[in-house]
Amino acid sequence: MGKLVRFGVSMDERLLKTLDKVVERRGYPTRSEAIRDLVRTEQVRDVWQKGKGAVVGTLTLIYDHHVRELNEHLVNLQHDHQKIVHSTMHVHLSHRMCLEVIVLRGRPRQIQRLADRLIAARGVKHGRLVATSGEDLV
Ligand code: NI
Image (cartoon, rainbow, N blue to C red):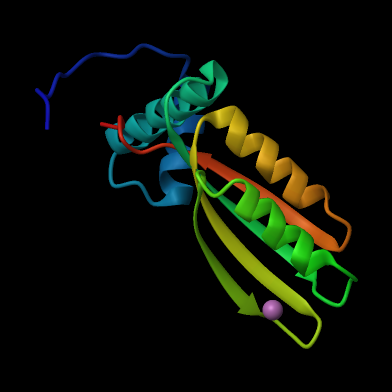
């Protein structure tokens, strides 16, 4: 852990009320912890926007495995990107529906492009990429 620095923050009291609502709603122990998380969120967003360096993402897909050739298509796409597909978890949700969580590691644009293609596949009912990073977070 680096050196801990204290600093004063001035803000409109209405903005402070908004911060306190966030603190209460999400259960932060202190305002400081909430602010640290907000800064980290910006840090992750910044890394993704710059597009440089390695990041991590988790892609959640819900799909109907009865749709013809969908399984094969999803697996082929992942094999074609084996350098960024770190691991996959599959859950059979029902007779028809599958949940897949794919951990992706690589450059932001590569990850986004692959996620977009997987989500766009016919038979995928819902997909969401959670863009995060990890190595540089304080
Ligand atoms: Ni399944």
